[in-house]
Length: 263
Ligand SMILES: Nc1ncnc2c1ncn2[C@@H]1O[C@H](COP(=O)(O)OP(=O)(O)OP(=O)(O)O)[C@@H](O)[C@H]1O
Ligand SMILES: [Mg+2]
Image (cartoon, rainbow, N blue to C red; front, side):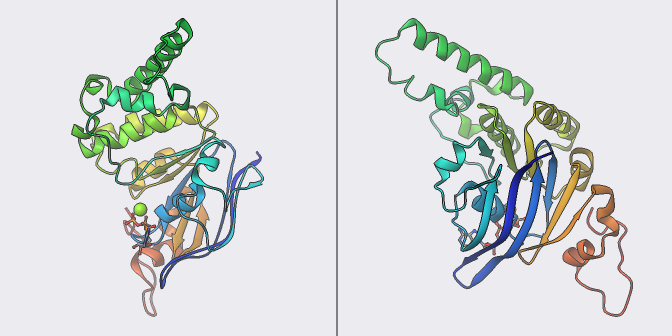
C-alpha cells in the first residue's frame, strides 16, 4: 500500500505552549488509523496542521508524496482531504439537507443561478440525491428539513460526517466522531465508517472511546507531549507501557496498572 499521509518532524507552538514537538507518523492508503492521547496532547492540532488551518512551525506534512505544509487550507482541501470538527457549529438559517448540499463544491453558484437551465436543474437534483443518500446512511433522514443549528450535539457530529463525505474524499479526518453520539448508535457508526473505508477512503479518527477504536481501527497512533509514543494494534494498547504512562503517568518504582487504565 502506498503512503497517503506523512508527518515528518512537525513542530507547532501557540505562543509559549509547544504543542507538537517533532511529530512523526505515516498513514497508508486504505487504512483506518486511530489517533489517541490524553486531553490537550495535540490531537486536534494535528488535524489542523494537516488541513492547513494552522501552519506548521517546522517539519513537513505530505499527502500522497506531495508536500502540503505551507499550502492554504483550500489548496489542501482541493487534494481530496475532508475533516470534521470536535465541536461543530452549524448555520442557523439552513436546513440539514441544505447544509449537506452546500458542502458540494459542484453546487456552488447553484443557488444564485438566474437561468435555471436543464443542466443546472439536473446538477441540483444529483446533489440533492447524494445529500439524501448520505443523510439516510448517517441516520439523519428524519431531521433533513430542520434548521441545522437545532440539532443535538451528537446529530451535529453525524451531519459533519455527511458534509465531509459529499465529495467522496481520498482522506477523511474525523475529530471525536463518537463524542455526544448515543452508545446505541456505536455499532451503526462503526458499520458506516467501515463501509466508507471499503469505498477506498483512508480514515484517521481521533477518539477516546476505546471500544469504538478497537472495533473500527486497524492501527493506532498514540500521542503524548506532542510526539508519537506508540504505533500499534488496538489490541496492544492496554499493555503498551508508553500508552499507559501517557494516560496515568509513570508509577514510581513499580509495575504499571494496565487493566482498564485507558478504557
Ligand atoms: N488556536 C489555538 N490557539 C492557542 N492554543 C491552542 C490553539 N489550538 C490548540 N491550542 C492549545 O494546544 C494544546 C493542544 O490542543 P488540542 O485541541 O490539539 O488538544 P487535543 O489533544 O485535541 O485535546 P482534547 O482531547 O481535549 O480534544 C492545548 O493546550 C490548547 O490550548
Ligand atoms: Mg481535540
